[in-house]
Image (tube, rainbow, N blue to C red; front, top):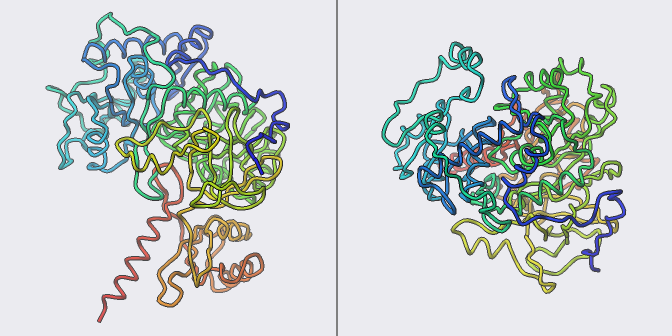
Length: 573
């Protein structure tokens, strides 16, 4: 069977199957939008708006400042920022100069930040004042020649800056400037009038380095090109089939993540949209912004939508403003989708939540549920110009429709490779007999005869118990369907007899008290809905589950806890 003949095209509606991608930088697409929509608001932050023309002026001034400091084509600069205007300005300014943005999480550990800076060979760093202490406290040398420190209110109007300084800003220790440490405002004021040509970068030039979430294997720096980002943004806008200029998108997903940078920022800003920058997620603040800003688009991970459903204030919302509700970053269970859809309908929205699928190696999503063609359990159909195939794990043998195997992707968003890791790159990117470069995602899934894709499990996250393979996400989906369960995660723990046994960690629904009777009810539910060998042999109730920096359940932390327990028992006399 050849499943690269795009049977899903009949579900595209008016969406073109092929798009015309210009061989230009990301900045160039943003500049075109700024010329087309100069008076529209590009970004909102802490209640202040920045128009497209104004944001473009900031980007040019920042680019001039970079050039005056000797930073240009091919150089790398670490952007260690939450969602705020400075991060957006620096990202596009680096792109304008041909430099590469090394995007990292500001909540990373001190030594982690130092490692990212050194690993990328960054010549400069942009970091908020509240996290600058991490660079001072690290026991590792940072060789970057320029450290730009910014306050979170630095790009707000003067009265708002003053108010911030008297409130939240009072708690932040002020850095000592001098030498290679400079303030954002002084940096921006120091640029010369000489700018690089606006077409300095082409589509195939590396534009950014993002890092894999670290939930499986070793964290790797992913080199993404202008073409990768532009194709992601254009494909999202096309298959999204709802993006309009002047409409607001709540940018909750962080800029150091492909979902946040590729969709919440770049897709919005090449489409004339308004990216409402939210520096830190808080469910109460999120609900307040939904009511006050009345956005057209929400983009988030499953935990965000779970938080929305659990917030009492959300019951008062009028969501008739919504034109698109998108979920990615983690698997959305059919049960959670049904609950979110019911919530949207009861609050005036005609939209349903639409699940996407992707990896950072493809910026973010490469697959999305068509607007009016949802299939239960499916993560949608491929983006324009993107092909999927399912192969037998460990081979390049294409499997028939419906048979489970490793998902492979080929298209314009596939990364250039892993930074400084040629062997890892060779494992992930392979040229097929068709001459195409295929990304082997490490994810298990299936595809039906209409081209709808179904994600099953990360390939490396498999529990082998008594010789049987158990895929945690499938067990979690069953447990989450129990009416007394809010969320769960499943791991394999060491077992002298079975090698591994299945253990479930469960957060009960609001108002539900963990009892032996509840545990037995969940076990009976599992026995009814899955193979006996997959039923967890142990249940542990928790008030919350640990999360990764991008909001996914950090099952690795739970695995580490259980391993330490096992090792401790083994060490006892």
